[in-house]
Length: 192
Image (cartoon, rainbow, N blue to C red; front, side):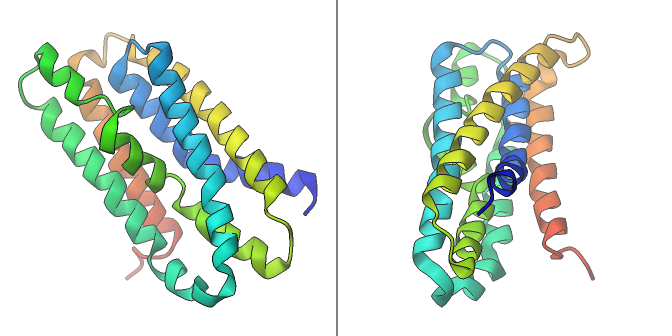
């Protein structure tokens, strides 16, 4: 597979993670090194592993996965987004702030899977074309981790705006729902 095509593919696959990273940066406002590392590492790792898993599955289950991948991504993003919205409308004490950290626990896992589901389908496609998966998967993972890092910085800077105030979690949750709906739109699931 040509290097230029791999880079374009990596950028395209990383856009969901980039958008989620911006929303996370807005939500957290102040991000420590651990949070940066956790989100960048997990998004990059999942974005690297999913094409490998898809490639390994090959053509045998391709039509089953393609029929449902967008719904799985939508459900995972919606779950985390709705939880962020619900909790942003509640009390704002320090204890609750800790529970809203999307760089921890199941929220991190769900976001990592949701933003990398498309990479699974790409792995299936690469298998169908007969290409090796190892270099593309590594590049996809590194590009995703890098864009996640940039997205967190953009979100953190944006969160400093007085306009966002205490509703950063609400904005982040709405953004995740928007990304989920866009995934459905891209896959034609919203056409009636």
